Length: 191
Image (cartoon, rainbow, N blue to C red; front, side, top):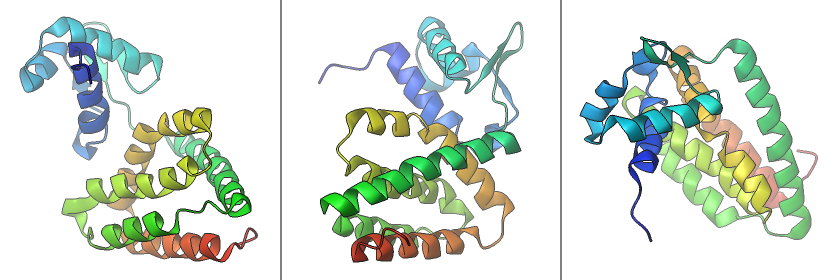
């Protein structure tokens, strides 16, 4: 496997670590600050920020840096609508084809049960995404996988916001995931 370029390293760091950090929402980041944190030059960081701006994940503001705008209520609503369409389609397709990954989904749900509490919120959300992404991947449609994976950063940001603002949200997610698992395992498309 080829080594990651500086731009790829900066892009992955920003997308996986910085954008998903609840404390970073609403902040401005400078290229120098990021360079100091990950130990690479500013040019690949600038390139990574341009990619993130093209994905509408940061806003580049001259002389201020990259602004990590918190997701708006409308963006969260639209994200949940799109997720619902993709995930329902995936559940229907895997039930029809008999390819529901019951074992893997069960394993992820058990892992998620062990990640309760605010200090594990980020990992809880990452496993949450993996639970749904596993179902989408079971369809076997590469374009659908890439499209769904493109939503990952927004999903994690929205999930972190929900966990930190709604009491009992982690427990509710576990109940929802168990219901999804029970339905797909039973081949119940309507559920």
